[in-house]
Length: 159
Image 1: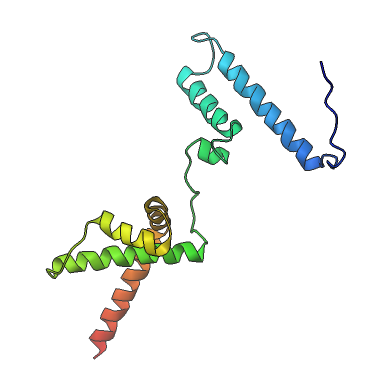
Image 2: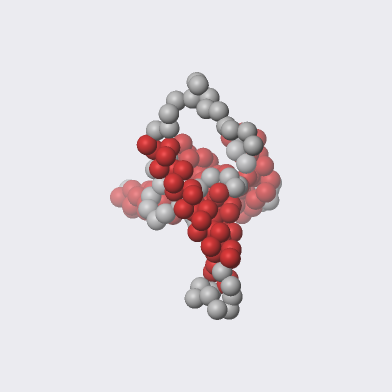
């Protein structure tokens, strides 16, 4: 059995690295214990234990970058704060709305997929990324759009 030698160039582990290793070891131990539970005598539901264990496996194996992603969780409640992402969402919204107007006015109409394909190439984002951005901001965009329409309607009443 050969002994591992320390890399002389490697700096000693920082307290944060040590803490991260300890956390990972605890997760690994927890997953191991979940995997070893005997059912039906376990106090934990089999389906729940399997779901939790599989999420932890995804995270520990590096297949999910965060636990939120491993558990399939979406962004938290609240207003997103990325202005660039909002601009992308706004472009998607405007393109889809313009396409609806074209259909109503009898002009050339594209499928949603065709509209997204055009945006995908011009914005250098995947269709999924475009739809994710739109989902994050759709309520705010609709609210802003409605407010603008009402404000425009009020101005025309003053004439």
